[in-house]
Image (tube, rainbow, N blue to C red; front, side):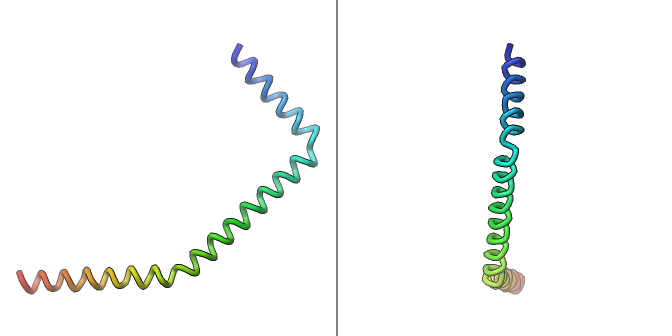
Length: 75
C-alpha cells in the first residue's frame, strides 16, 4: 500500500511539473541565481576578512614560538 501511495505522489508531482514547465524553469533559474549571488557574496566577505585572520594567526604563531623558546631556555 505504501509503495503505491509513494508512486502516486511521485507521479502527481511529475504531472504538475510537466504542466507547469515554464513556471518550474523560472523557479529553478531564480533559485540558481540566488545561490550564485550568495556564493559570490560569501567569497567577497572571505576575501575581506583574510588579511585580518592572517595577521591574527601570525601573531598567535609568534606568541607560541616565543613561549617555546622561553621554555627551552628555562629548562
